[in-house]
Image (cartoon, rainbow, N blue to C red):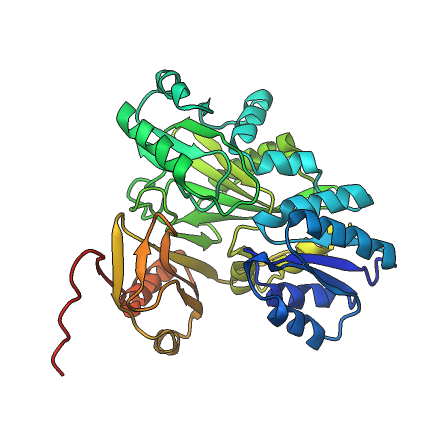
Length: 433
């Protein structure tokens, strides 16, 4: 197998960039693309049909769990030597790293991925390497809470070491709230297959709003690691937080000035190097504090919507460049930003709710041609709770400037027409015709 037509293996099945979109990118790099699809979370046949329709060389395999995905990949390599292993999902980073390591392929080490998936291990690595990040205390048992509160002080941020999407992340202001957050965190079932019974109490960084700018006081750095180099592609802004720590949106590229962007990139670069990541996408969240940027967390994959946002903002195939990196290839292009991409995420308010109204998606898309997609999470009549998922809907749009993108997002949000009532309330009477 030559690098001119590398044999790429896509591991898919849960989360991350959609398999059909990922296959679009991989097929531009090579005609030899195999898939190992985790079947535990849904029917693999639609993905198999899409892969078969493309006439790609390779094999389509299914696996029941992460260990079986590794076994399937090793056996595939024996039949048709692999050049690179690709995934776009946080949940599938471990089999990707294990396969790359065992087969001697380009990729992050399993040790580096383990650190990247553990907030507690990240914090310790940052402390050891002098990377600016919040003060923290590790909580393993309920009896650790009092000492953690004394060390960090209250208010503080309580979070699971292993988690995603800000699930179970809470601001606690009293010892009782801390105990309640710990017990609730223990009781919450994680979507992760890995398990780490560790929590953190962290120094509070005031992320909710960056003064009166209309943006949050944190940003993210989107990077591509390939062929021995770290390429920091763009800094992204975040929308203000008004529902606790549930994310509300991201905008690409940033409105920050050059000096602020450079400081954020330098902070991200230190963190990535400290963890030991070498390959693929990295999504680093950075707090913008009066004392300078501080790392919130590093993720060894593309931030969920980033591949599509790069397409909208720069006509840049981020997913394809990630796949090139997995095959040991340097980037063959760089993003040139021509417009702003904004992803809006509508948080679910605290409590239990019922969706009583929302506009048909087709009508909203027709009314706003700037939209790339609208993705409601619930049907009218559905029960919603932020204890199960954090957002009512998401949508992605493009606009000439950050300000115009924000204004357009407000109009789209109103047009979605999502209305809620308390789940315990009796159904509202039908409106007269």
